[in-house]
Length: 427
Image (cartoon, rainbow, N blue to C red; front, top):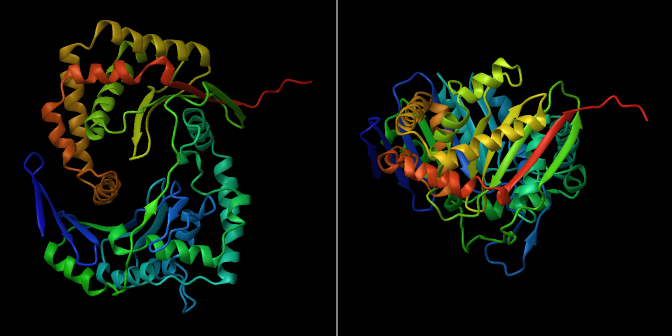
């Protein structure tokens, strides 16, 4: 077993890789709540691959990772594992992202009892023509629901502007047309290709003895024969953005602006860059800045613009989002604010204060077992140890943050996505 200790937050990670390739990570935490997440490196972007032992390229319908997630709970005995877990008093769920799918539950009691059901359903899929068809209507409703979410629409439109061929443009749930092609044979093909121990990780967080919980999990692993390797195929993405601007009308009361910047430097230190952009959010647009105070007092915005940095091994981008009735003016204000910092640099004292604030938010995240585990899972599939963020604070200085600002936040990498209220103009 590998033990990684972070002296700054006085926490440890216990990591064991089993002989079948499955990685188990334990984060002991003295809390009443216990949390487990079993994740597979298979998400919406994985639509083309060579299955283990095959030389013919397999292409699957968009949305199949999410469809499979839905179907995993149904069991041959007629029960739904989600209902079984809920009846034990645990909060069970699952989710699908661009690059992984996760199954999870959290509880204060009955963890061991729930573990039996949890380990069973993830390892024993049961797909039939009837139960696959039954799910189609449910997922179609979910697709329509997401189509009505302004937050999702503005984000997906931004991705289509940033990327021409990158698979991040694939909606996680797919479309009505693509999910109509999904059948039990395709689901079993996906499961048998990707749901294998060497492509999965289990993270547990809470009041656990690491050796004890690892042995419990090991005792419930079903032995299966695995051979060959998964070979994924991704589209080659161009460096330039796909289009500069997109807007859409929806049933909302106030416009939302999303300004995004495409980051083609996929080999850079993403953990360090993530922290730098968190610091930039505070310095550029934070609630204590004159930028926000002036716009708030003039009733042009009611909350500060946010900056998020999203990244994986195949894409990276920064997103600035704000709600305002003064769309064009706010876009200009944001542009001017960025250019001002490029021209004048960052004040050292302001940088140090922002850095301490971001560090504090990272420490605070380690108080919640579900936040801890979900972060560990995401970082694991990015090839990052979650403790790495704390180490990066040692080397991160204002010159590096200025470098990120100057290299990433540039015009030829920028797009604008806007959602506006439906106009009442008469023809």
